[in-house]
Image (cartoon, rainbow, N blue to C red):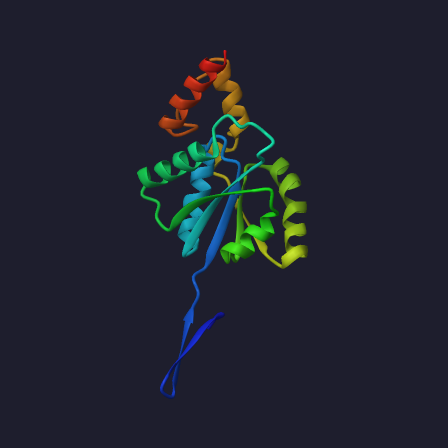
Length: 181
């Protein structure tokens, strides 16, 4: 049996495995259908997933951290994805966040070769620092062209991002971009 707690019950020892906890980090500014796909698939593989909204207080995002957390929570609830909680962290190494949360693994979605080139050294550094492993999930082909920055760019110039982000996010994004004009 894997690592866990041992509880003495008379002369019998019962091993209770601790929950398998994964972290799905990102800025989620905004959350996309690709993000939600990876989070849902990670939730199917782990007892608990913590979506970690990482943010840099020195940079202004399109949405506040609180808005991003709400978008992720409501989108996952609408899809019936359980076993997930959303938390925000700033100005810390991901490995320190993982240690604090008791996470066993970092889960990252990969859309294509450029994501591998970007994510691979970070995964190796995280393992070097604390031994935490990174699980790479290939993105769904329907979303391999979708990124938060590209969605914002398309929406900024009047393109339709329906289906690439939750409807609530699409509406908020269009409203926010119009207000900035």
